[in-house]
Image 1 (cartoon, rainbow, N blue to C red):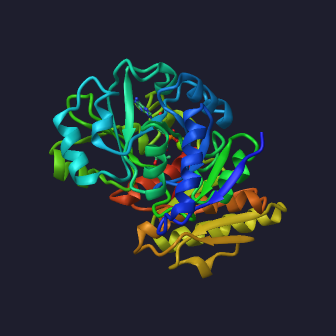
Image 2 (cartoon, rainbow, N blue to C red; image 1 turned 90 degrees about the horizontal axis):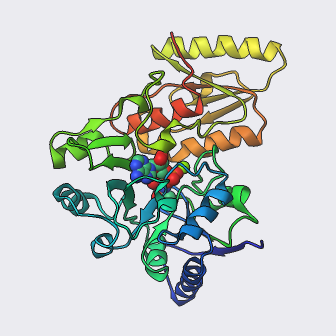
Length: 352
Ligand code: TXA
Ligand code: MG
């Protein structure tokens, strides 16, 4: 399959861009696949109400078909067709946080095929704020099923070049809308449980959700690997974002962390291994690794979130075989950063 790559500037959706989005919309309506930017990460879109499209998405990603897709919509009205009922909590959250990086899980209606929900009776729904995404949804018939636009197991793409790396020849079109703003996937909240539960942490934090809904719980398995307990979002159980090399997170007093990592780096170098470190602005000059990547300032978690996935991919490009990362706070946006980092490291953490 020849993949068309089209550039669109989110800040200037002119007639030419609209024409391209219309063409992309036709592709999706006809059962094809289009990768597109959202504010979180790039998505791999197909018609969410067409079972054949969802099957194609799984095949293009190499993704297990029990891992449900998120259906992206452009307005509240559209949701009514795909859910049994719209709970009060959904209206409250939508008022405050949509369009934006939040996904809500509700009981699905018969309109949503099981191929899209991985066999579940619930459906995950998100209304993205990215203008290219919103227009594409409108041009595609209103319901785009889209997982992140990476090959299964790789970090989610934060730039079109990473979609091209993973999906060239596997999808009909890739829309290049530049670098995404957030860099981590949306927060997922399950509204079907008695107390709403966060299944995946993201840019929308537990505190923001509690301020709107009152009590909100969090699926405990997403922060630490409690062996034997299955996460509630099927996708969270898969090893993800895993770089080809071996990644270890080091947690503790900052000075000791740097010391420990440098000690380990020296050992690995002696064995002839290529080493890497995920550092922060505060520590980047202190490491003796072959490849040292600065994720951003410790005072700016948004910057760290935006850079993380790209750094993991760069380590692969440079064939780094063993990596260390400093740990981040387990609160606020740090919760999402640590969740992704822990998955990338296969939950390998050293406390010093
Ligand atoms: O920011 C995002 O959410 C991006 C952009 C493209 O919107 N999408 C994304 O999709 O991250 P994906 O497929 O990579 O992750 C979706 C997650 C998976 O962990 C999946 O198991 C979970 O959502 N999920 C989807 N539907 C669900 C459901 N009905 N119940 C529980 N978990 C669900
Ligand atoms: Mg994904």
